Image 1 (cartoon, rainbow, N blue to C red):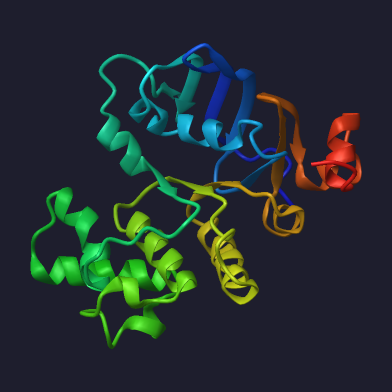
Image 2 (image 1 turned 90 degrees about the vertical axis):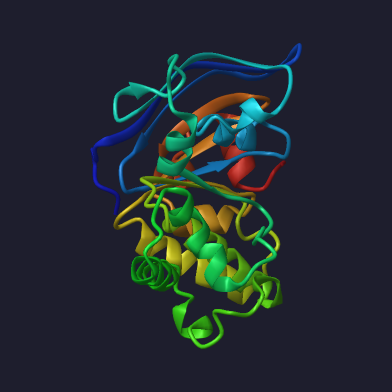
Length: 256
């Protein structure tokens, strides 16, 4: 069961987002609770992934986008002038829909982030790589072949490597954009089990089209529809006692 009132990690108020003249997100208000898994569900094209990318300002990489409202991380507005966006993306990491390892060795994939942050001592780099791979439940499978190209791993292993790469820079929040959509059921199960371990230390926000995955993994769920957050509550309430008829129609499979 989810704690009744865990502390907040991120708070979104009055969020509007635009792709040019397209009003993609409309007045989003949501709190992301610390060391909890929050699932975002809804039909394709409803704004879930767009919203996820606002949480670490990745949408700024897209031309002609505009945002209104506030997003606070530990009480600080991440869009205020002078925000160090590189530091923000270290604190709020992203795992994408398809695994995207660098075309380098397994070791160098994980070592990349710490090196960028100024860690160059060989022993410290090796320690960080081992810690991150263990935290991503990948170490037993790759410890004897760290020098091999990461692209030779299975898709499931590549996704866990990408999670290890995020963990190596010591984030506080991990954003996951449909991280299992390209994986087989066994690899999906490993990612879901990993998420349960990671939430002991990290705040996780996951976009998923898999209703069972949302129900299995998350403590809180938000239902998006046509750029609006129609309902946000505990996962148990969303799936057993939804307040909005459109939420009920979606989670029961009547549309979506």
